[in-house]
Image 1 (tube, rainbow, N blue to C red):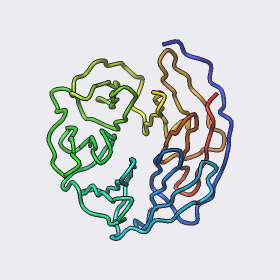
Image 2 (cartoon, rainbow, N blue to C red):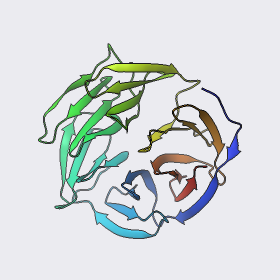
Image 3 (cartoon, rainbow, N blue to C red):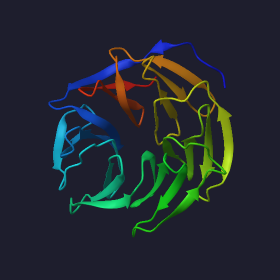
Image 4 (cartoon, rainbow, N blue to C red):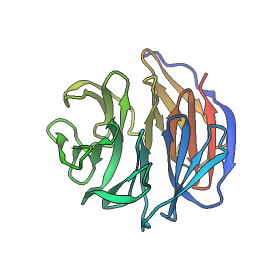
Length: 246
């Protein structure tokens, strides 16, 4: 892939949070924030104005991450993945004894769950059934996994590669990367974002090019989300910054 020179991204909006947070994720064109207290979610507009506060019906003692699709929110701690209907807003355990390293929407209400403890990717159905989708014979130490257009997915595969696979669980492509990123995200256009905690830079893998950008004002990223041509970064657990891609 051709590599463009490193340039700074244009800062769009900044929000100082009232309480520390642990993760952000896209929800359509909005952004969802999981607070470190494990007691509520915040839903933000693209300009980071709060549109909704969603209390969790049970407190997570060690919240780690979240995801969202058309009908559900998903949150997880060190051992359990929970699912909450956007209609009923009741948080229920969905997959136990799992250490989630990544979540990707398979279809509304269904998820691919990367389990770093067992080294597998689970397919979790709408009705709660689960089965191994990809195991250690195909992917080594699966990390964050993202959904891409045309029924494709991408997963961090070992310390220095990432792999694309389809809805049948068949690896179609694997590429080498210089180092495993701390955070990975994707957008509906198929762009893949790698964010390094150490450098504070984001690498963007598109169909034909690879670019690297500085993120002005980011000093300690802890989560990243992408929606449209915007990326949102949770910085030092206390503020959110959004940047527009060129």
